[in-house]
Image (tube, rainbow, N blue to C red; front, side):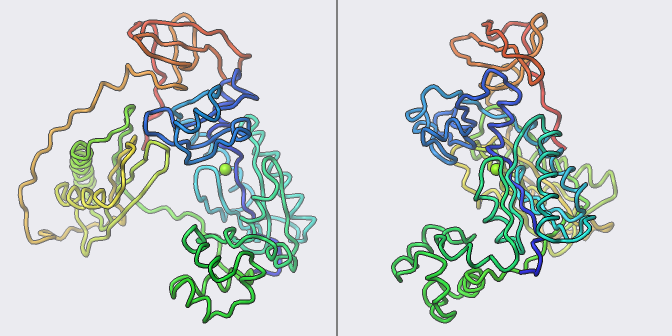
Length: 433
Ligand SMILES: [Mg+2]
């Protein structure tokens, strides 16, 4: 904990849904649900209009439909979210070089590295308000909620207090007064299991938690979490804001219009990507020790797993073997929409015979479920040769219904086409790099 309120946490409000409402004027002010469109999908983000009906993140699509049948259910446009996120992160980096993104819509900013005259409450409050206005400008109207406090923990707690489109500054010295009445679950890492253990020990609030000795807490929640919990209950958190460091890496990834469910197919794709990574590494004369995979689930949760080898490699078969074993640890039920393989920590030398064997890799045949260009997921961007740009309102039985509007137009008309109409095209997102 610092002596100044100099850590800022920014959280964009209902981010995915807000981007959709920006780009689809007819959906502004209406319930919008991103995710949950497929049979087994879950909700990624619900707009505030949908939250009124009790729809929330991670709810099954089926339950969301039951609660809010009139919502627009969209499959999501990751490229649009990422592009908007990039603009927000640039604004944050204009304020301070120390920015730590947590996800597409959330980041910490260290205001002590910003160009501010001082770190008084009035000064950081003004900086926070300016930042919120700037975010709104560069995103085409998206709102963010900001928390400013003396630690990461408190800044994050503060940014939850005035959602949406608000701000809370916790003056130094006021941290414990703010925390004490709160439930223990506001502490990061206190999930249902820990909360239940604490509840059985009669501990519900942070005020109650503060009265428990460290030894006692270790006994209740275990060695691994006891000490950290004891500290956070006292608002003690000295974690620094860590700016992203760029590591040199080579990676290959692919996005899939239809969620992949077949594990063998995923392994086949990873194997092929690993081979491509190896080829590119050899062409560039690079090798690296850390192999990672990236898996984006149907609900946009993005998982990364990596494994560091004892010596560098540029061998596609080796990279593929590590990638497949990393995939083996992930739960991909519900489907996968992006897969990628990368190698980082590049060195300029290679040690042969990494695993002491060069067994021939089994070629796994790769057949994608359907050519991706002709599918029409709800919400996807399309362009019609005569009508111009719009988005998929719905599709089925060989018919696609499109609403012709963009962020820059008023709400537009709806037209239906045959699914194979040659005049209708998906607007392809930029290729992921
Ligand atoms: Mg958010």
